[in-house]
Image (tube, rainbow, N blue to C red; front, side, top):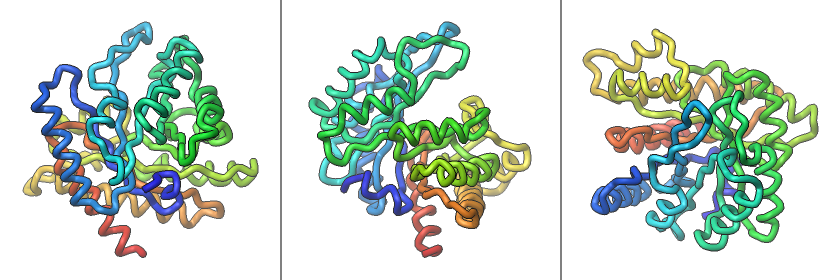
Length: 305
């Protein structure tokens, strides 16, 4: 399966956090087994998205807590089943030469073809690596001879001038975007409508936007996602943590309703943007719920067709 060929057909992606760098061999094997079982239970899955997990200090220096997504992709060995998508925070790299080396290793040594290139966590930090737009353009040059290669970036609708950023990244080669985890239909619905209009005006084919959702089991999950940047209103928080409802189930229902609102808003616009879904595991205790959420979205999609 070539992920690049599925981008216009409402792709479904499961995002799995690579194991901690100090995880035991047994823990890593168990996670690999869980991912394989998830792939078997969701035959319509289009890709497995592997984020790069790191923390930044006050000076913007990275600390990598988890396994390199490329290495984890190799351990998953999904070839012949579906393709991995590997994320890379490019701004932390030591210049363009380091980025070039990373790309060539990813293509030749790891056999990867799908990438999400990510920027830094602060607009006030001067990072050593290329910007996302620069990395997009360079990746396009380096992968010219590699069929089926596709580049993606991150969409943050709350960020000022985000529509212009999306158009600029689309121009430099981004074929898809993943959003932050969504618990509200706005501002993403408005951003998508404006992005579609801007692409039409600029004569640019809009990229597919993978709307990200994550299951929530308890208040700590809500706090963590809010810390990551998700917008959660008090009303939505109350719906997510309904009393008398099995932990996590309410978040599945909330996610499907939000997706329906966003899709209706986008499809009703003059220049609709192609959509897909990215289900984020976020925490190990929510893995099974993430698989269940993916199944819920497939059932909703089939009912809509």
